[in-house]
Length: 330
Image (cartoon, rainbow, N blue to C red; front, top):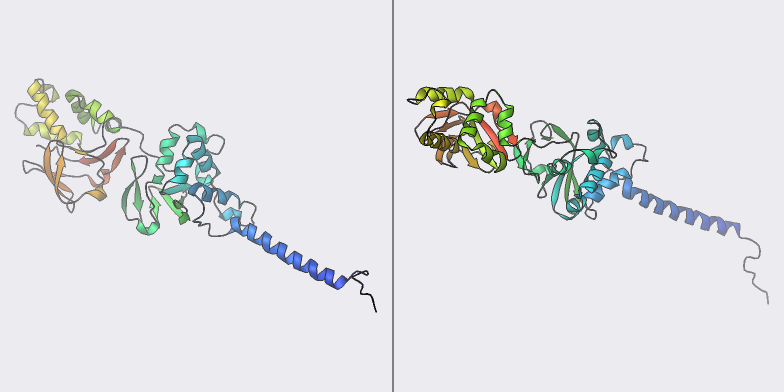
């Protein structure tokens, strides 16, 4: 009976075959591992918004990395402000500036934490719900900062002055729209905004101070103010008997009159031009009628006032201003 020998002499054909199989399996596993971070479409329902942003950084070793944005500065900013957890756990939409967008302002991972009001700036890039590009329309969208960004779809997707260069990147808890410029929210309150328009609104500022409403529009709100120009106030003085200048408003009754006039120009909340509808508008001292087709307001005395089309939606930290060419009278 012959004894069977188990490969006492090496079987090179079998060894080569096993080596080839092992090499093939290794290549498959490596390929799968690389593809996880090197795919063209990084949409992932398994990763949070912050995790999706970080996956872009893991692609830097690829040959076409120059065409792929990174978000190191944004991720550091979110971490340093404590907003990374918020952005990871809530249903949100993030307009995400690239590292190049921050670098254009001289900002990077090393100095981003020194930016004043960084948290407010970041919140200005976040919407409080999931909004895909197909859900957007021309107009204003409120952010978690409180102020709104302006959406323009006439030539691509533009947010304020920033272009969306990659839209609808999905994450487990929201969606990312990549933008090429950093967005900055308004930095002045309503009073500071009126003062910054000096001298065009110097009379409005004087009237606010005279009536004591300056502290109200500086510290409260949000309000929408239909703001008359200096020329509008000068024209009003010619309409009123016995008043040639603000100095003639020198009694409590005069001050009350001015107060009532100013309150008639103020609407509670932020009302942007894209929110306006024709019909009655309730303000803090009554109602006036608005016609969005002609951009005119008719006050309680049947006087018609025009909105200045290129001076609408001027934002403040606590409201928005629409400039008008005539003082409204309650």
